[in-house]
Image (cartoon, rainbow, N blue to C red; front, side, top):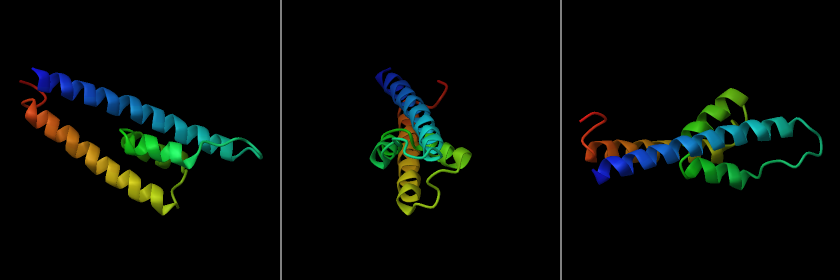
Length: 100
């Protein structure tokens, strides 16, 4: 019972963080086109990527073609995506799968 609840909470965190990361990458790309605009800090983008938003960051980088040449973003996004997917898979396995 608690495993399923934990799984749902984690899935919710992943979805919300991914949505936030996607929006932040889009916003930063839009601000990058404006001269003198106050941009989203790279630490903020990396924070949301590492703590639940790797899927959104991955999609944001593809859709907006933003931060694609920076190695640190590629490494952090790939590592976080693998870790978050593995954690979700483990929680699903522990909860007895998606349908019980």
